[in-house]
Image 1 (tube, rainbow, N blue to C red):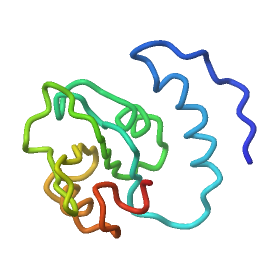
Image 2 (image 1 turned 90 degrees about the vertical axis):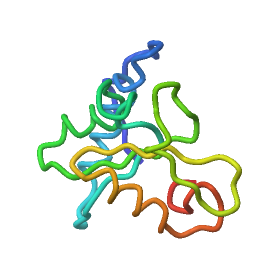
Image 3 (image 1 turned 60 degrees about the vertical axis):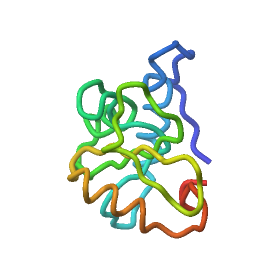
Image 4 (image 1 turned 45 degrees about the vertical axis):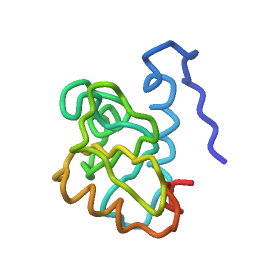
Length: 123
């Protein structure tokens, strides 16, 4: 368990402000090497324009690692270019990334373990 003291109250549309101190504290606890960070949510809304949690996390990292965002809910400006269909689900996941080509990020998500819409690692 990690105690984080500087967590601000929830602010609509600014979730990253509340979650960032917790994510950074967690990142500081990781001693094993890793290639990328996968988050449950968007890196960018609009695909590459409006920063979301994943982009803010990337900007705060001292040692930059690619971040892949997997979102369950469709944001109105996200096109089908970001959709990944997994399993027999009737609904896609929406993948955005920073520090990694979108095609590669989509490929990673589509090949992750798990028979259902959400990869096992993310559930």
